[in-house]
Length: 489
Image (cartoon, rainbow, N blue to C red; front, top):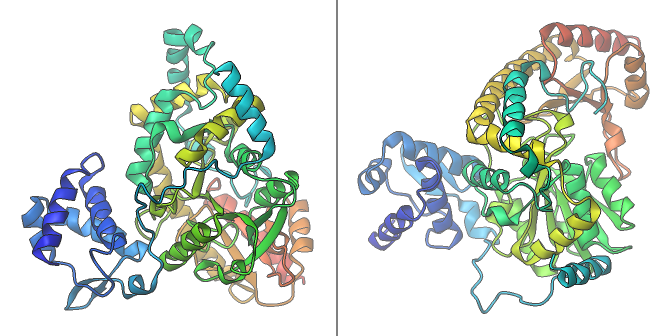
């Protein structure tokens, strides 16, 4: 790293102090790489030099390096230091657009939303409670006593005012807290006025379909994929284009031949059901493809908070420099599913369209519960609960993996994944997973047949099994039934 680069590093460092120091350093170094100021194969200065130049601890530097390495930006060479990843030199790096490059034309949105926009301007205005049901959190560990106290206090303090709230984007203090949280933990580039609070991630996806898609539009969807994605596409009359996954995530080559690709729906942090994480190179490819084809990327950040084998990965939205990524998240797996609160982070050029659509779909999500959730964030309960749940879920995951290896290794193997609240088993022999899942249901064991998530011809057979909401006794009881049923086949 040259003296000029070190000067840039110090100047940029002074402008990124809102986040924790390790995250601020990560953002500065990442942007140096994305801007081309640090190129693929270039050596970074020793950690002690960065410590001296920025007056920070070595632990802060190493935390930032850990995240950069997890994201694929750098690589450590034994005995030789830390280098920018060689892959960076071959990737389509997202570029920061100049004012001359910004497309000022009206975004491509559905005709019905054009009508809603016109009117607005005129007025100025899960599957059960038994193992191994996926998507069920450890509800017995949620601090409902604290939630009840916050709910009661919030109503006493501001009930009448909350009863008349009608902002379609949601409760502003919650959006402020959420924007800070997403910048800090997901490396996102967003402000509160880009966030729309919705009634769960599924409504967020539906809102996107209403704003962007016309009947017959081509929508690329991962295969296999969460059924809610397919349902949204079909419900809007659009055309599903299933795209296979490999070890790096959604394959982009099949998309090159599509001439009218409207949107690409992906789960880069963790595919459901396989658990695949999209590589950094593939993320760059996807962003480049979306820019060239003028397509929107819908990033459903599924189970992003629960990565157990390393620091949280940064979002695809955080890498986007062209305003092409729409980010969808939910609180269902961290707080509790019945809360029915999620959010959409919208590119600035689409904000007005989303506000107009939301105001005519249902007005707004529950304001009272949004206010309580804002207090839950602000007073530290959210972070505290998330830390405890990550520890608990890591223990339950470890126990389940160990027991599967002991009991079922001769009949199936586990698809590797670095986190999430479910595991995915693949059978080693011919087993009809749909029939097996139904047989297990009759025994009180809830699983999902892996083959049911596919749309293309080649379907893998296996079971999708959640573990978050189940203790060791429930896991043991469920595995006994699975072991018995498989042995009878």
